[in-house]
Amino acid sequence: MKPIATKTTILTTPSNLTSQPPLDPPASAPAPAPTSDHVTAKGGGTDALTAVKAISPDSPAKTSVEVNADGADQKSKNTANKESATAMGQHNEVEYIGMNETPSPTGAPNNNNIKRVSIIPLIFLIFYEVSGGPFGVEDSVQAAGPLLALIGFLVFPFIWSVPEALITAEMGTMFPEDGGYVVWVSSALGPYWGFQQGWMKWLSGVIDNALYPVLFLDYLKSGIPVLADGYPRVLAVLALTIALTYMNFRGLTIVGWVAVLLGIFSLVPFVIMGLISIPKIEPARWLVVDVHVVDWNLYLNTLFWNLNYWDSISTLAGEVDNPRKTLPKALFYALILVVSGYFFPLLMGTGAVPLHRDQWTDGYFSDVAKLVGGVWLRWWIQAGAAMSNMGMFVTEMSSDSFQLLGMAERGMIPEFFAKRSRHGTPSIGILFSASGVILLSWLSFQEIVAAENFLYCFGMILEFIAFVRLRMKYPAASRPYKIPVGTVGSVLLCIPPTILICVVLALSSLKVMVVSVIAIFIGLVLQPFLKYTEKKRWIKFSTSADLPDLYNAHEHSESLVY
Image 1: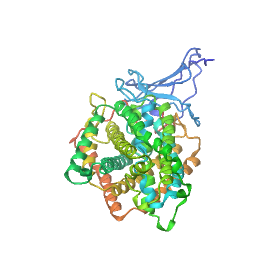
Image 2 (image 1 turned 180 degrees about the vertical axis):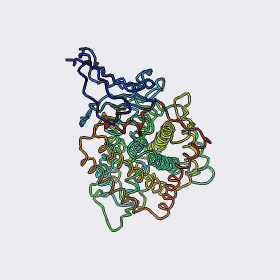
Image 3 (image 1 turned 60 degrees about the horizontal axis):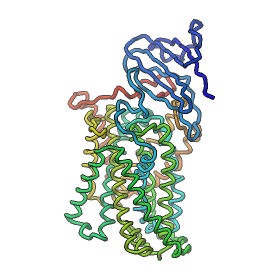
Image 4 (image 1 turned 45 degrees about the horizontal axis):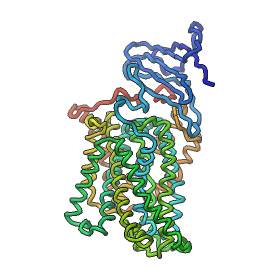
C-alpha cells in the first residue's frame, strides 16, 4: 500500500535570524492537503531560490522544500530531518538542486549528458583501486613465511579494510560529489585541511600509480629479458603510460567496463591453478613460521599496500549512477572479491610447491603456475598480471584526476583543473597525474610502496578525524547509508586502524620518512601560496555554484542536506 502524502506550508523567521530554531507553524497557515508535502520558507530577500527534493526509492511520494533567502550563497536547511542508522539496502534519496535544474540520477551537477557508472563496473573499479588480484602479495611470504602471510590476509581486512570501507560508504553517500575525501575533511575541519588532505592523497595516488608500470615489466621480463633494464624499459614505461592515459581520456564508463574484462581475465587463471594444485597440496607447508626471521617492515607494508585505498572510489561518486544506493553495495561485494582474490591463491600456491622463501618476490606466482600447470599457465598468469596492472593504472589515474576536478570545483586549486573533455573526463587532471607517474617511475618497488604508505597514513588520520567530528557536530545530517553505531562506536571503529597507522609510520625507513615529511611541508605552504595567487588574480579560481556551501550553510543548522 503506497503512503499518502500531505501538504504543509510553514513561514519561518527572516534569514538574518537563522541562528534561532525554526518557528512552529502559525495558526493562520493553510490546512494540510492530501496530495503532496510542500514546505515553503520565506526570508528577507528574493534573489536566492533553491529547492531540496527528497525522493523515497520505495514510493512515488515526494517532498519538496522551497527556500527564499538573502544572497545567492545562503541556503536554509530543514533541521527537522533527524536521521537514524540506515540498514543495509535502505537509502534516503536526498538531492540538492537549483529551481531551474533537472534532478540528475546521481546528484552530480550539470553533467546529465555523461554516462554514469553502474554497479558492476563500480565493483571492479573498487577492486582495481584496492587490489587488482594477488599480484604483489608474494613479498608477504618472503617476509614472514606462509602461516603469517595467510593469517595476515584474513585478519588484516577486519582491522583496516572493513572500517575504511564502512566509513567510505557513509561519507561517500553523505557527500556524493567528485572530490570525495577532500570534501569530507573540508566540511569537518575547514578548507585548509581539506587542501592538505587532497595534496597528500593525490601525491600518494600518483606515487602508487608509478608502481604499476614497474610491476607490469617485472612480470614480462622473465619472458622478454630486454625489458629488464636500460632504454627498452624506459621506452616501455613511456609507451604504456601514454596508451593508458588516452584510455582515461576517453571516459570513465569505458574504464569501468575495461576493468570488468581485465578483472575476469586476470582472476580466471588463478581459479584454474587452484583446481590443478589440489592433488599436490601438503597442508604442513601452510604452518611454516619463524618469528625470529620476520621482516616486519616489509610484511606490514605489503599487507597495508594490498588492502588500502578503499576511499579512493569516493572521488568518483559524482560520476556514479545513484551513488547513495550503488556505492555501499559495490563496496560490500568488492570487499569479498578482494579478500578472496588474495587468500585462495596464497593458500594454493604455498601449499602446492616446496617453500623457498627467498624466491617469493614480485612475479613468483608465474613460476608457481609453471610448476603446477605448465608453461601455458605461466604465460596466462603473466598476461593476467600485465592486464591487472593496466586495470590498476587506469582506475587510480581516474581517481586522482577526478579528485583534482573536485578540488577545482571547490575553488581549492586553479579553475583550469575543472575543465572536462568532450568525453566528460578531467583532461588537465589526467595530464597532470600522468606527468607525475612518469617522473616517479624510476623508483624501486619497495621505495614506492613505503613512500605512498607513509603519505597515505597521514591522509587517513585526517579522514578518521573528519568522520568522528561530523558525527559529533552534525548528528542529524542526511546519511543515506549510516554505520549502525553511535559517537562512541564511531571512535572505537577508528582505533584499530589508527594503531596500525602508527606502527607503519614507526617502521618506515629514514629515507622514506625524510622525503615524505618534505612532501607534507610543501603542501602546508602550497595552500597559502595558492590563496595569495588568487588574491592577486594571477590565476583564476572559481567555486561551482551547483555545489552546496560547506562552510557557511551549516553554521546555524544541524542538518547537512545534500
